[in-house]
Length: 315
Image (cartoon, rainbow, N blue to C red; front, side, top):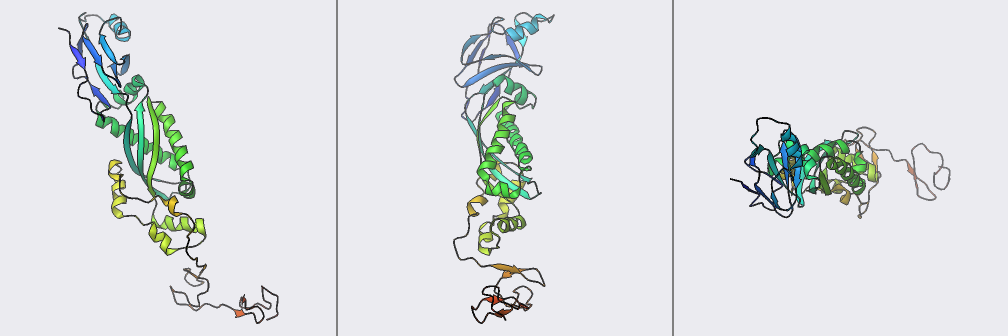
């Protein structure tokens, strides 16, 4: 007796579903709902695709499989074998998170969100569902998340730390463009991708602030500290665990500080960064020679100078 083939109970987050019986009968009814596509898949190849509607399976509307079976012998003419993979063409959202490094090997921890839809169901079934054995929604999500993280790591490795954090919009666009090109090859349309958090190690944060401002500002560096639990959750690489960890978007904090700035210099003994007008190093305690004061303009004159560098008065 002919079967009724239909994906019932599909939820808003379901991407794929494989019909449980691959022994099919000619004359069976295939029902494909809106925002669904049914792909007939066998031996690693996708043959025929059906869009929304009610279809009677016959040799006329299954030309790919019919041609295949016409070359086989000993097959019952009333039956044939094929997987039917239902694919949702709706838009979906996912989360990603991982660790990578920049061009100068600075560590990067990142997480964010992406939006996608299946654009080419036949290609998608072959490249993702079939080749990766991702016949369930969970398996597809895991594949896509891993695919994105892998491409992000490869792409971010071509950027410097400063480019990543001071030009995040431009960097994000370049990353998105490269991943979109890769997605097109497996039948997926990457609608959008956004970083929600990005961080590096404390040592590289301080280096980044020094490059950006030429000064070390303790309050600014403290603002960038993130929780250890956020870094640990990203270290697991699961992506979903990284969502909502509250990591800091560094570029928002890279603006010049609005408060008063203190000029700094380097201690000649221990190399610590200290205020330029300090008389003693606050790290090792060494006394710092600061020269004399010009009797005419009161400018600071470096030790050993014979003339004032500001007004030229002889010292």
